[in-house]
Structure formats: structure tokens, C-alpha cells
Image 1 (cartoon, one colour):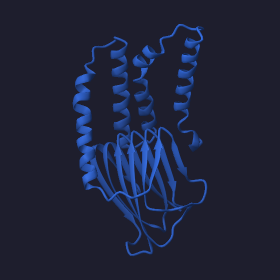
Image 2 (spheres, rainbow, N blue to C red):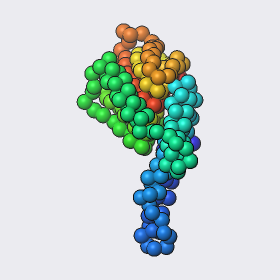
Image 3 (spheres, rainbow, N blue to C red):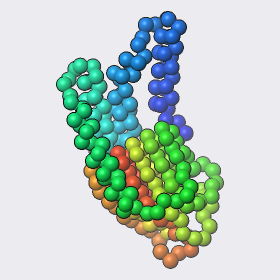
Image 4 (cartoon, one colour):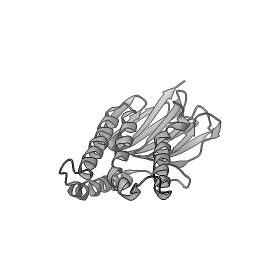
Length: 234
């Protein structure tokens, strides 16, 4: 699939919502758009869960499954099909996630000055030449792809802070480049150079090459209900 179209579902949902509101405003159809959104917004969680499952690792299966189940439970409650007290779940769930995120930030590296965002969209640096710099990469319900085989890497040490929240970050590194990976997953998954881990709260490290090389890239990853994948290729 074209990587630039990995957010096709978002465009489709927005188009359908716009058409419904337009038909309602023009008097062609009697649709309460506000009520429609209130009832069916949990389907967004289901769609995100399906996207997470496509990453096909242990953390992705856990995170995607949780999002899909939660989405259907909330949808059933909104449609009065089941009696589900989601308010109690939210009261406990989000504070726990925030606490775990805070612990991860305290354990993490110093943040860089430059930040790159993929919010419900895609940031793709795999098709054209680009210059590698220190930076923070955020994938929030979106995707980031970095192909370092296409990057201009000057001699030196680089720091990449990668945070995926309900999204995914894929990094491809050439096998002749020194890469040091360290990361944490919270209800998500991380895969560093073939070493995969995932679950409620797990950490993983991996590296390739010599630490005294001319070019060293340090990747720090945090995956919260998402995934970060670092692959070594020729």
C-alpha cells in the first residue's frame, strides 16, 4: 500500500461526516449529526485498533485488541445494547497511563530542540534524500517512516527521540551504520533490530556496530498503545 495513503480511513470518515451534515443542513435528510457523532465515535477506537494490529507483533496485538474491545464496549453502551460502566474504567485507566508515561519521561533522554509531528497523518522520509539531524519524532494516531539509507549522515553522534501514541514509527537503518536503541512500551510494542517486546509496561535495548565509530545514532523510543520498529537492512 502507498505509504502516503495510510490515513485513507480518516479521509473517508471526514468525507462521510461532511456529506451527512450537508444533507441535514440542506433539508434533504433529517439527520441529527451531533447525536450521530455522540453514539458512533467509539468506532474510531476500533479503526485505530485495526491499524495497530497490522504491525503484527506482540505489543501490537495486545494494544490493538484492547482498543478494538474497548471501542465495541463503548459502542454497545452508547446504543443501549449492553450495560457497561465506562466512566469507572476511564477514572482508573487514564491516570495509570499518565503515571507510566511520566515514569518513562523521567527515565528518558534530554529532548531535542527540533520536533517533527505526525498527528492523525503521515510523515514519510523514505523516498527522497534528506539530512539527518537531532530531533524528536511524534506519531499520535499517525505514522512516521524514516529510512536512514536515504539520509545524509555526517560524522558525529545523533539523538532521535521517538514517541508513538496510538500510532507507529518505522525506522530503517543500513547495516553498516552504528545504531544504539533503547525504549519503553506501555500497552504497546517495540522491535529493535529483530528483538521484539510488548505488553503493559516493558523495556528493550539493542545495538549494532561499534560505539567508537565515526557515525553513531542513538534512538530512544516510547510506545504508548502504539509501536516503534527499527529494522536493519542493506
